Image 1 (cartoon, one colour):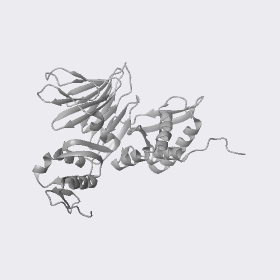
Image 2: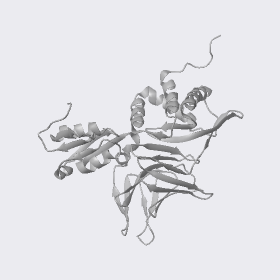
Image 3: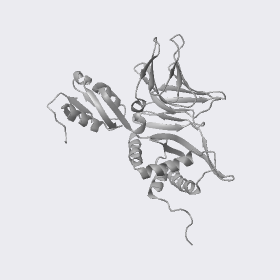
Length: 334
């Protein structure tokens, strides 16, 4: 007798395998890049959109039993290798660290998601994506921490260090509030990024709108629109600026995007994601502009690209760092 189930495609198999491969909620920057490269293929992208639709049906009946079967097979293999945590990816960015609390039959099959701990953190050269109990997603950048405290009338989080991207599920009855260094960012359903840097706070809005309120006595709140950024510093009113939000939040896709960025600023950003640092031998090099797309965590490619473009000498230090210096242009191992 022939198998009545539809034939699985290779792309569908690989889409399900990503669930098993990402069997830990701590995700390396290399994994982010690998998933992005795999997703660049239209067939893979379509397969993952299909699998993603199943996951978005959490708490509802699954529309396609075959997707359920295939995904559960992958999860079972991943569970044997890596324990109970499951991570999954949404769109171009990582979008969830979840636990499978139960999968049971009740007129259909459903997925129950539960939150395990109210505090999430990352170490150096590590990212983490968390799916909260309300369906919101928090993508923590390197060396970051967020604390979660949901109440009946409010969803409150505190960013205690680093940077996080928030993809907020709409719930008009429970506003979503992020507290950072005494300031508050309030949203209902939106996507935004918050980064603590240089003694201040930077809020970037990608989608929807947010209300940014400074510490008491430090000026009036502002409402951001997409592609706007709020800059908060102690003792000063909020400053706003028009920015390219996609470029500012490109770290969530595994890439860093620079456009006429001072080299010193670009180096500092690249060094956040790599144990192999890039150094400038001459402070005067720091003002030279850098433009381009660079993989997160790939300090070597960045250093080689900058050396080639600006005709700089590049050397490798014993500790593995890359040192850029005024010419003549040389690149080790080129």
